[in-house]
Image (cartoon, rainbow, N blue to C red; front, side, top):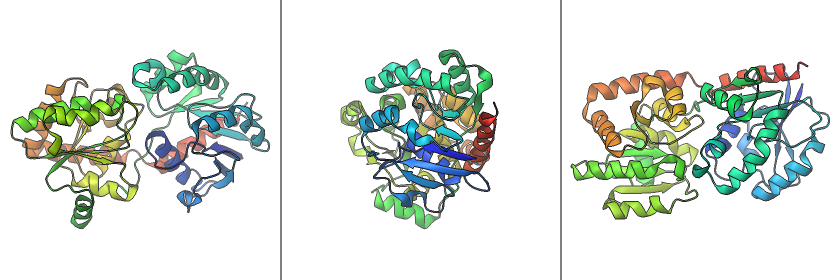
Length: 370
């Protein structure tokens, strides 16, 4: 079986969906006899897939322009799929009139269920293309059961066509050595114990609640810094402005995007990982922190409850005092920290990219059956 995989989303620094697609591509061909071909843009860096058992086909469109990509996908991509037995669109949407069966990956329905937390361009785009793509798919892959229910209910898709394939934690993420921690701390100028958040700085991540909780803890004498690692997304100005307004500007470190090779040291060096998201499709950073041995405090967003289970200390997403209390409990209770570390290791170990690739290949075989 020849499978084409749309990888036009891959450009620049990976996070969120892009990181999931990149990680999936690195493992999809392991131990498989089928042929997998990643369809990439004209400026894609092939070194990103070094060692992966996947072919690369360059398409005549830049992978750095969203508009150019959308137009190309709608008008010309289907023509490039002749000769393939299956097309996998791992980024929510697919073109019309495909010459082969479609497998579609939908990570969440935030643009439809919480439009106030998504860019207007994304809301319009997914309202237009996502329902149509879902109806055309032979199988739809989602990362969690809660997303499967949403897809069936919101998009009117038969639940029998939806398959749950959880994301994976990169095997390189494990407790770092003391030297690795020290190098990362020095590189990012983290001179004190720190609480960590990793993710794009955007509304759904609910960082104002974390900052207000942290300000409350600082007023109570907490010696820690708060490190925020992630690209600045849309509507990030409030987050950038709030530390000064709360009087904690000297204690908040905005690290920007952190390269993959620094993540284990950054996660493992943190005293605690905090993830206050309002909504997620999966929520990979808490599991990455768990894999590195860091206790996690996470919101009660439905996807995070499903993905992290009982391995995280929980709080209501918009309740800053409750978040402050949860952080205080974990930092002050050695037995609780040890329990969270142990359950976190076990939880993170359940999510691997080889397993995700194996389950995805099984979905491919289902989709090929008339």
